[in-house]
Length: 500
Image (cartoon, rainbow, N blue to C red):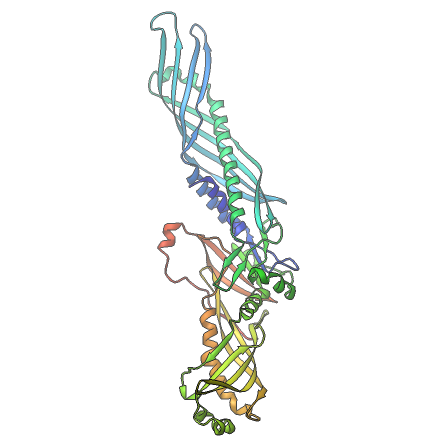
């Protein structure tokens, strides 16, 4: 695994898309707490070690003058770090970036050694060789990363990077190693400097590769064939002492509709994310996110239904209506019917501390089927009020809705006046058996939360507050093998049901 992926896991915290709302163009907020930072740091250290080992150090050549012998050429080659252990590490947030420090680090190396020198007496050249074990102790590794938004993405820059070796010991094996131990010890400084520069160069290379990776990440997450989630960053990250926050657009939208939705939707800055930062991650979603989804599907003419089948099929025949709307039966006796339901405006989602709910305005057109004709005979305007239930399923946010009540008014009629109170039980049945199940079928699938692939939410909780909901969760990382073994249904949070 390449070093750049180590930084990817560090910046996973960044690309978990942690936003904190701005006043106009950010609608989703995610805050990474100190617990989350520590989780990512530990993951980073483990992945960094796995990706660095084994690490090849450039060969070292040195000429040494020894009394009576003259010049001796010594070569250290195949110098390889094969083991690395980090005693302690920490991550700290500054005003402009993230600082990661690993201290008390030890590493073990293997190497080959060889020397040769010329003499005046036969044999004309004397040489010897062998292997050696090298132990580096008290090494400190640190880097400082700058984060800023760049044309909707994240730009990662390396502010500082360093590696310092405190102590190094070399033990020779093979040949007359006991005789040459002191000579090879002269290489300590050069070996230490080579370890420092090689590790620093590897880290620098990894940061550069990760920056390229971040720049290539998509700006939208597909939801289905009609919609995508806009995950562009809207401002620079906000770094505090024990948390990091990012802002993203977060709306459901297609490119050509972005400005229309943003001009009609406004939001406020969230007052808090998760209580006492008890979870690793907090994702705050403004109600504008849900309303943008409703507006998008409404504008895509996705919210129209023709009801031609119901559990009690006799409901769709004028004979069933002869006592409710006698004039309909007299004019069209024993005719089959359709009920054409279409929303007259996008559903309006409202969120508060006490509820999650929606108001839906719809038109119900009664159609009579005669020969090859569909004859509209009346239109009833409906105002439906529902309560919502939300749950986290894996990395998706889904839910369901149930009918609380509705009101009706007559828009127009070609068959005279209608007694709407007599129609109420039929309309209730249609909403309960057709409209609500259809809506829940789509809501249960949910939509993706902005989480990097390979990470999953765990023990998620949902908190409602004024005009937004917040998902407070811990995070786990699964490698590709673990993900394959967990392709079962995702665990979900308990439903949170409240009424508008």
